[in-house]
Length: 327
Image 1 (cartoon, rainbow, N blue to C red):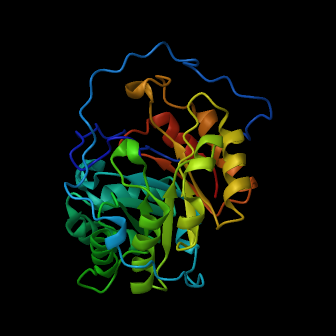
Image 2 (image 1 turned 45 degrees about the vertical axis):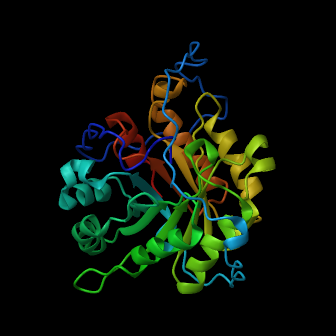
């Protein structure tokens, strides 16, 4: 979801829980918002280690043919309304599923997106899901697993993704869907249309009726020309663009994402609830007005739903804005 958000990333301090549902936030103004911390000061990044990736790259010629796309048939109800992303479940309210679900329900969330696997460790989310899924479902909240395929071996990536989709709690409950976080070479991923199609095609062939989502980069001019949106859209039920606006206007970025991606697939928009200071962006987290503006733009623009990255970084004011917006 963000550069270097791997399984080995140090834990963040959990955000304060929302104490109560606050008064509704007024509709966002039509004028451009004033964005604190913009433009950011000059940034001199410290030396960084190369991103992790698998040791062996399966050659293109050794990959199987990508299965043909199938007609979309999964319900999008799990994607509707508001949600929140959790990248390390044990760090969210100390891994207490009752507290997590209580906070989510208080904020009016409809789904939780929980990281369950990646190419480095395979499917590792069973303990977290066993604790969370029954409690979430009992409170009317969907749980969507997500994972990070590096695509060095798309067949192996499809295998651990399949393990996540096949997982069941003792009472038979499973995930309400899965989102593949399709990153780029900057994050160590061997990204190409062919590798994406093989990976998603194998998952879709094994689970033709399960809700599949593609977590994709924001379709700005640069990525629109270089990133395989169409290859991903052919195999998923919806696209979830990472619309982290930084020093852009949130409503404008949402509008571009919806305009470009909705012809390809239904869209659930992911917004920013974290500071970009550690990567040279603006230091303050988005304001409550930015959060409400993002949500308003997503809903009025025709998005299926919208969610925020992430549970570990959102602050109390952002929680209040998220909770106040009825969706």
